[in-house]
Image (cartoon, rainbow, N blue to C red; front, side, top):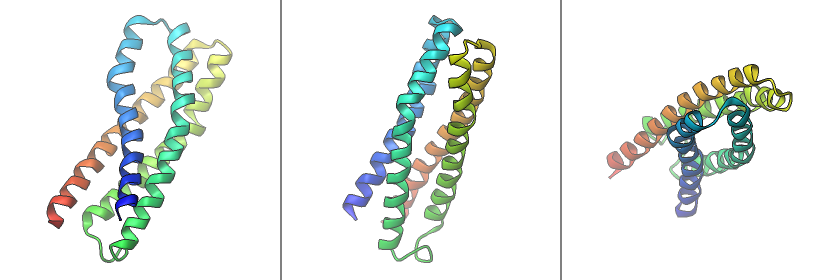
Length: 152
């Protein structure tokens, strides 16, 4: 159970921590100091490097999460916290898949074409969806801690 928990936590830290850093630290500075012709390629490059880590995180979170549920006796044996965490995690994953194949693909294309207006719109969509995912990820962390407290 220890290895599965470690992999699960590492996946969450990379994904949620990366979103927190990007949204709360990098984004405000980029807006303050960079004009769109510099800011939008920066974000396309940041996401190009970060999103493979998100895919890996999703793989780790899913495999370790289902392993942990199995070790605890299956879905029928775990509490409502685990059910809620799984549901929220699936919603987060679906939002990420949409970001990756929708607005992120458009952002890369528009940056390549130097279309700063449309690139900015794509980035705005990504920003809103990451804000939702970050909120859901932080909620899941709170639920995980609550589940630990209630299980002791």
